[in-house]
Length: 388
Picture: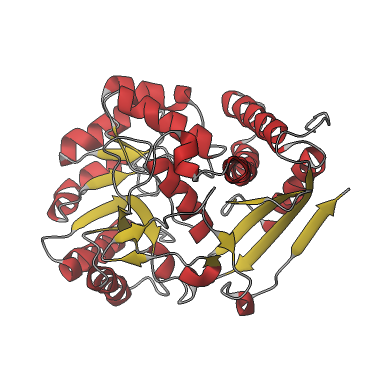
């Protein structure tokens, strides 16, 4: 159980926490948290992919009971300290640690939004560096796929290219089982490569579904795909495995979407086998921790490209962090999930020709949840309010 104390406010006392979960597709929900203060100020964050709705909602309730009554600044300090404690500790199982850090990541994002808005400045400026007018993205195809067939992979890949993306990512080995799973996954990836042509980058995410020895045994087939990177080839702690894949394929290695501490990244970075670090503002325990990991990675000579396969709230927070990292790589963007994605926030998310726009003139995150644009027809909509 967490613990906290109540005191006076710097930016107003937190009075309410709303947890809103929207079903989007058969595999995706956008789970958000909205923190409000007595004077009506509010901040939003996303905690999608934390775990089951029942368990994540229970932990949201726990944290909400502790931050209600605190000032925004006090709540931000409390959530940050708890994220750091969990990131450094090993007393929890990995699924429970991931769930709690992701929920705390949603709270941290909402509170950063709230404090920046109360200060009257845009969130990127509050972090330290102002945003430019637009930022490059690459297209994550995974959440738009309705079938695991070459034709379906090719269809979504062509959609990405037609939308102006110059880099795409797919996870062709997800959901495959049996002795033919590597061959089947390679066929799906080959369909994407053929669909996008030679001038568009293909990033392969293995999600650790293919063993290192299986990758090495199929090295020529992987090389034929000309991947721009191999992501999650193995655990971050498996330095020898990453080195073997990197040397055999001659391809940069990416990883770190669930990293929450420098200690998790340090061995692979020190060994020079992790080329691109992919922190996630949700799973790291919040955007501040993701930014800390990004800066640590760049100081070690690695590149950074934020992991972000979820909704528009997480995307907006990831964009604010990306602006803080010099030479940050393109931001991941899930495409094709829902035709009303852009209107799930207000003002609308603006993506064109593979670039995501930054709305000028706003304070804080610059977005609010849109009750009109959210895909409410897709499933049940629990909306839980905690108040004192």
